[in-house]
Amino acid sequence: MQFITTTPLFYVNAAPHMGSAYPTIAVDALTRYYRLCARAERVLMVTGSDEHGEKIATTAEKQGLQPQVHCDRIVDEFKLLWQKLDITYDRFIRTTDPRHERIVREFFQRVWDRGDIYKARYEGLYCVDCEEFKDPKDLLPENRCDIHRKPVVARSEENYFFALARYQEKLEDHFARHPDFVQPEVRRNEVLGWVKEGLRDFSISRAQVTWGIPIPTDPAQTVYVWFDALLGYVTALLEPQDEPTLENALSRGWPAQLHVIGKDILRFHAVYWPAMLLSAGLPLPERVFGHGYLTKDGLKMGKSLGNVLDPHQLVDRYGADAVRYYFLKTIEFGKDGDFAHKRFIDTLNADLANDLGNLLNRTLGLLRKNCNNLAPCVPVPEDNLLRLNVADMVGKAQMSYEALDFTRACEAALEIARTGNSYVALEEPWTLFKKDQREKAEQVLYTVLEAARIAAVILSPITPRLSARLYAQLGFSPEALAQVRWQAGTQWGGLPGGQQVAEAQPIFPRLEYNEEDAL
Image (cartoon, rainbow, N blue to C red; front, side):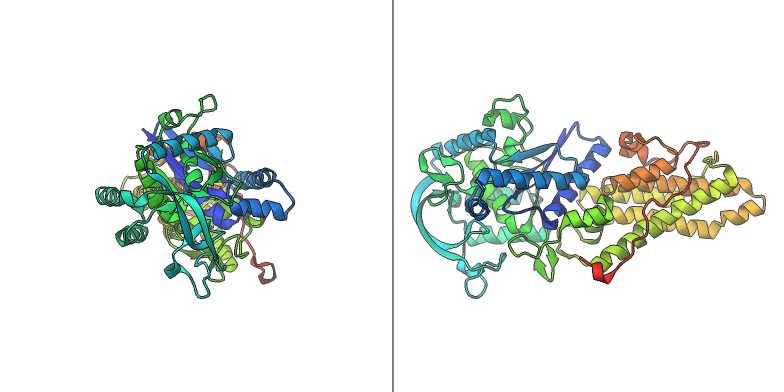
């Protein structure tokens, strides 16, 4: 069994922004969860860069750079950011990799041999930023792109086309037989609406763009950036020693289980890509999940609009865990979400510093004062209020992760912390110690510490460093959490009685909001 999931292959016309980081954090959290569960023999996270096309060439020219030099610089920035955000990807595919070019050429030839590529003249309205001809009915007033808010341009050129319309019935049949192929439901409905309107053939080459892979049958034209980039998901599966053939790449695990992409590129992944694969006689990915936009000032966050939120600035100021937690907890995955700096601060303080952090600190403080920093050796009844709550939340967290519902996965861990704080307030272990009810007091302390430990396991795919700090304060070795697996790690009793715990320190320090420094 395997689990292969992919981020978009990000367009490197400019440095990465929070809109790029968001799906990558989500895919990283999901793959961390699957590694934690150890249910798949092979868990692979694929990310990478889309480096061809007119926009890349134009951007490089403005900077006085060769396109490849520009791409190399931006890719380095992506990789640096992924490192800062604790992204544990397995493959980083670049569409300028010569191995990828060979895969594209071979795939193109398959589709050509199938008779699904032909040459024709096309006239239409083109958005350079989207690298796409636009339907006039989708444009904003004054013929502006509905995504980038920039005027489109009229173009006429002779291109090669892919016979998408031939796959109308096959796609309709696939969507009917696989109702979960496109998620969430609102995205599926969009795709069904497009298909119902009738599919139209689309151009897969450019005559005026030299920065790209030459068409094998006509080197005067280059492969359309999307027809090129989508194949990166296949190329990425090659092992370093493999001869770069389509057969070798496919044998390494295709099809992928999940593509996570922004809803603005849904049509390419949920309509064009499946049809291309059908034409080449290849299996389709299992799922395509279209997440929502990150917005700022009410507009989609994007490099072309210039309204980006710098993730480097966020992570440098607040740390990777803070950024990962906020965007996965406060924005329901699949829906749009707007960043607000004060809400960012308030959420982190309430959830991580107060609910979870205070629960651990107050309990460790009582343990130091009354138990010499040793975890109590006392049994906890199965019908204990907090223990029952933990068992319930473990199940809810697992279902939430598998549904890509990161918000509710976080809420499950928080519910443990909140119930733990209420449990401490109700039982008053400090009073029990004073009344010489030591066994009962120690039972309360152990119950809370074990609940906090399990909450750390639940949160570890989202906040790996914070969870590791919590584990370390419970007396575990630095590498202990990395060796934990979901089933054993979320079972009651994982904290050994008599274990020496560490001195209480804030696992997440309270943050101060300064309106003048708001991002």
